[in-house]
Image (cartoon, rainbow over all chains, first blue to last red; front, side, top):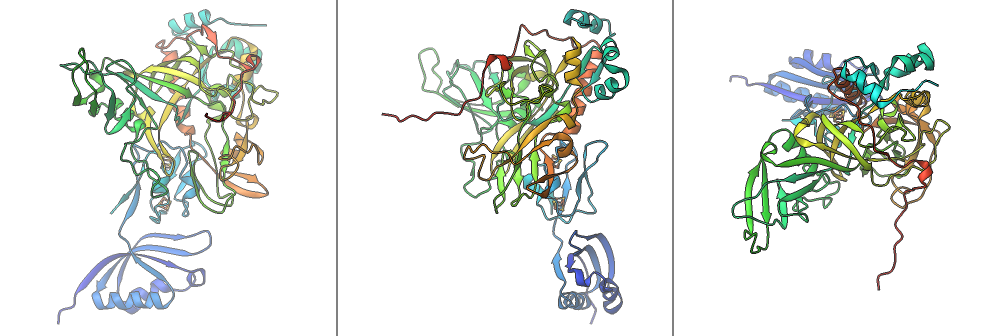
Length: 139
Length: 400
Ligand code: SF4
Ligand code: SF4
């Protein structure tokens, strides 16, 4: 029987105690999955967060996800992305204090607000708080 | 003591010889050269601010339809515009929202589109849908009108903002245990963040704290075009508490301003929505300050370290009119990204864009340098502390 391959984007969050463990390594080695890490981040309270694309055999993929969940890792499909509409942003700074991932920070020299796409965890906290609607959710 | 007049400065502007710097740039110049030399060298200091200003709106004359209508009620893109003026004059206020907006029924409401967005759309050159109704008269028989309008076709369109450029403003925090949604933005519980909304050392009225140069007829940058100060703003409170440098330590003076909407640009008039609060307009405004004397030079040299405001709780104190400050902090502290309130470190956020305020001051500076913009000498200054005016609360009285 021909095997079915899958490519899926997922967000995984793991607690502090697991940050040191070679989870990602096991996922590649034991389940034969090809991985492309899109974002990696450790939150201020040292929780790990990875956004990645996994590719491989459908059954192995499911097994891999099960392995993660058994380890106490939170797994969610990545269904959206938050982007900033650069033309609309007025660089006020109202979003900065709400972002849990430090993806929105003030540049001390220019006083502009820098948005780091790679740090953004698409939590959407900034989306309703931006007065001019510059933070957009893309599905 | 060396002094200059408006006329002397305007002569220099006409010849393209005026020396103009921003309220940020002047700080180091004075430090380096001293007051006397700087006053000789520099003629004008430009300021700027870019923040949400709820007391704003536009007066539009849409022209007469055929047959004519005396508009009784009108909507622009479904947002109600005030029509209690002559037949086809309308006033669109920036905080107005569509009649069917869900408001805060599911709290916090989004307030995605309002009068401020209508103005932004008009200025961007977009067609706006006008719907109007009336009761019909002998001279104005029409009862219904539905059409598209465009800024370029209107007879007059001018911004008329009854209260802009607030001289200083509260820094808002939240002492409660729930998130609050205010006109000062989203404020997290237990002193989660502190929001402020002033461009500090770049702000127009903080550079002329006692209104020695700003008054009726002052020519200004408004929404990317040219505007004028026409009166003091509503809630003008010149008798507010001030420091030794004359700078108020909380909200004080305000301005009423006018300007031709047709000259303005959408990047300087941006529709805004405050979740759980309402819709408004972010207005770009800049005022040139002529260096008439040493006294004025000293005012414009003010730095963020010397401008203070009050930390106010917006969960209980502010809504209930309880006058209590949780502390006095400087804009230097606020702009550092963190302040201390009740012994806790609190991250700060601004609602007014400092980088855009700087761009406005620079833009105004280049207009003046190029001789495109002369200073307007006020025919009357706005009332200062000596006027005794203050901002009074409403006294409610029983209705028989
Ligand atoms: S709140 Fe919106 S407009 Fe303000 S800096 Fe953030 S993204 Fe830009
Ligand atoms: S969605 Fe907004 S608040 Fe959330 S991480 Fe991304 S930038 Fe930060």
